[in-house]
Amino acid sequence: MNWLEFEQNAINKGYSAVCGVDEAGRGPLAGPVCAAAVILPEGVVIDGVNDSKKLSEKKREALFEVIKSTAVSYCIAYSSVEEIEEINILNATKLAMKRAVEGLSVKADYAMIDGNKIPDLSIDAECIVKGDARSMSIACASILAKVSRDRLLYEYAKEYPQYGFDKHKGYGTAMHRDAIRQYGPCPYHRISFLGNILKK
Image (cartoon, rainbow, N blue to C red; front, side, top):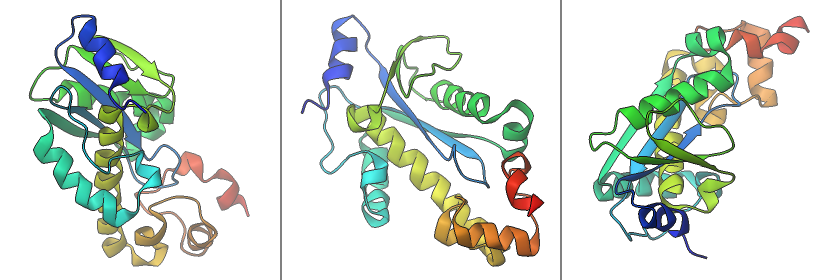
């Protein structure tokens, strides 16, 4: 498999700073959605990198530091729970991606977005479905986004230990749903995601 096919295609078209973009946290019942953008040096494949969902937490944590030190530039950005509630999760995800791309210290001239929706960017971009398993830059972005969001949820767990955020990272597990029914939502919960849980 050629991890750099999409990057190379963009470079062949004349782009010089190609970033991969991915998000973590669209599905959970709590916490922000996180996005990351990564520009790698041309031709670089980081050993061990894959779609973040296919890696253990320990492996993701180790790669997090490698990616940050290898990247030409990277940016990690969020859309808050309040923004998710106000503009919906799809728009909040696109906003976090836009912030990540615009926050790069080295300005990208081309963005490869995981999935099938392009955020409102001022640079050329393409969507790559399952890009986190096909593009090195997007896979790196998926790891930065996932690790950053998970670390945030560990902090929430210290503040609200009754919900078990450190175990499920805000996703709707049976344990999490039971805790919401028992204790009600906390300020980090996305109320619009809780309809069925709160009715029971």
